[in-house]
Image 1 (tube, rainbow, N blue to C red):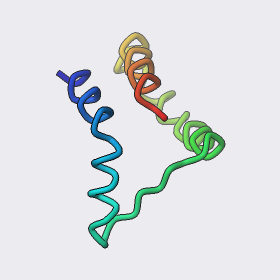
Image 2 (tube, rainbow, N blue to C red):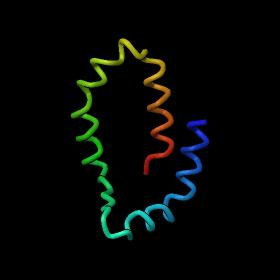
Image 3 (cartoon, rainbow, N blue to C red):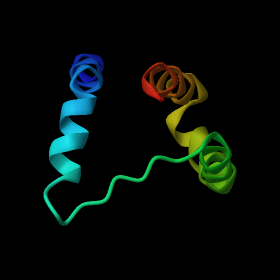
Image 4 (cartoon, rainbow, N blue to C red):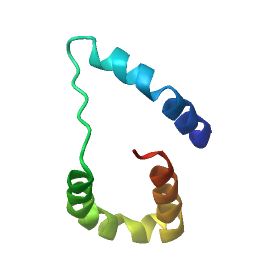
Length: 71
């Protein structure tokens, strides 16, 4: 179900960004590769804390799915 939702969202991304961005109250910020990496680096302690409880396999699967849909 989540994969389907991600695919649907990705297929309509341009249209959705236009609608969201043009309502006068929202701003869409697209991170550069460097900014995205800095965010990942800053979040690393969170991974270190929760991966043992969640399981590395699940976290890796989520990372794979995210990589598929990231610009």
